[in-house]
Length: 448
Image (cartoon, rainbow, N blue to C red; front, side, top):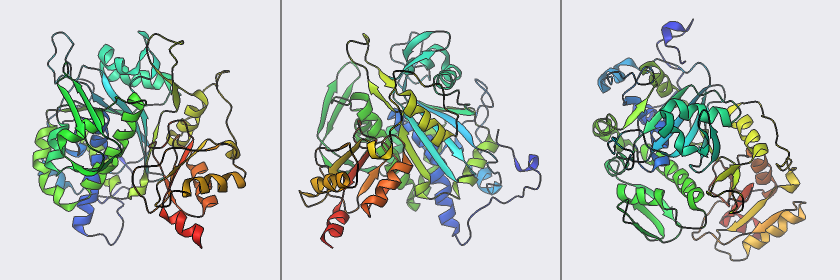
């Protein structure tokens, strides 16, 4: 629970805000960062919205309350504070197209994607783990299935129980559920989102009324195009590639929300959200998250995907994402401060720094730089370094992507390279521990 000021001894009416920030700057940061929670669920489902600050707030499962007027929230001064780390389960839901008696907008369908988010006032950070919809889990009381079925069987409560039961007994404090209906409208309202489409994406599913037709390159996507970008899964990576694109969209939405012009769209966004989001966060808790958002910089957001592998056709009839127990332990400990669970005998042991699986991808203008980095790392003692296909766009700065959440290992590699920047997401090579996307800064350094 996030206490209000009246329940915190010694608390004041003002949040612990950084000094020397303009009023407009503070407002933009409030809505951009508190919007991440709503936007995260949205992006995961390819279909939601932002600004969880102003959505309907049920006090408990199934008990709705009135949405506080936006003017009241402004006048409150965002006086509440996050007093301890809080874990929130964010769920984006498929439309209920095949569930008898349900309207398409009812929140009773499968979860398109789950995200587990930890808001930590002690480290001033937000950590997010994407849980692929095909993850093989035990749903308490129902048996083995894909994790996206938990909401169908028992709603938000069972979905939260399933995540806790399968992932180190993590305690989930609150939830947010988002339908697919709002995504296009919200993206259009904020003027679209700028993303890099790495390849042509074409697909048609007449049963779902889905047509995907995107060309490669940097572009500003409309709401419909952004949904296509997030839902595309017709490649070798399937749902895992979609999780990566959802992380890309989340960061693009965050950047767009930092634009002051977006503030003028708040009333329209609020009206859309009122019919599409369900959460058990209280008004005071939302205000506390808003105050917390004032303290955060862009680097305070870290994302990771549940470590694992695709099941083989010989293992199961269905296709699953199989979590790796050891690496999941590492993520839960680092991102959620959870004690490691028991390690299964058939899981690989933890690797030393020198044995990390390092993928190198050239994104510089020099076609030889990828191989140059591979050679450099091998000379430095790294044993498992491999070259992958060039990135289809040029980067100035080298990105050291912590694919499986190993931020310490990524930081060590950044130091070894002497250039670049650690990227806390899972948008690199799926089989790697760390992906190095080589930019022109390595070329400049290599020439000195």
